[in-house]
Length: 129
Image 1 (cartoon, rainbow, N blue to C red):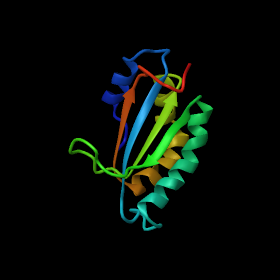
Image 2 (cartoon, rainbow, N blue to C red):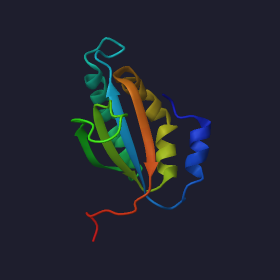
Image 3 (tube, helix red, strand yellow):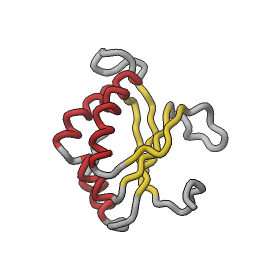
Image 4 (cartoon, helix red, strand yellow):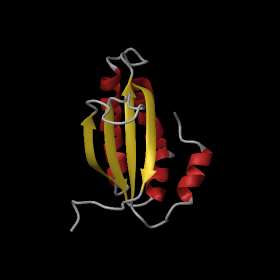
């Protein structure tokens, strides 16, 4: 679950100066791979480390919540969803490829069975006037 060169190139091809929202879909491990608590515990350690990295690059968490049930469709075996906005894809790439990120990423890897990040632009937001 590391970002690949191909994924980085696809992100670089998106709008350079436009904000991007990263939709994170998470499936926790029952137990952390390193044996230190649950998968959720490990992911919370990752979150505490990564929050300062994303904020330093102008990012912000817009929303986060537990998945309750699938209302429509069949691919809904997720535990948690997080929406993170970055000022642009370059800020996200910079964070994901930094040594500081590599230092905390082990907690994410230990905590998650699966993790998908989808880059999305903003078409509508009722929070904006």
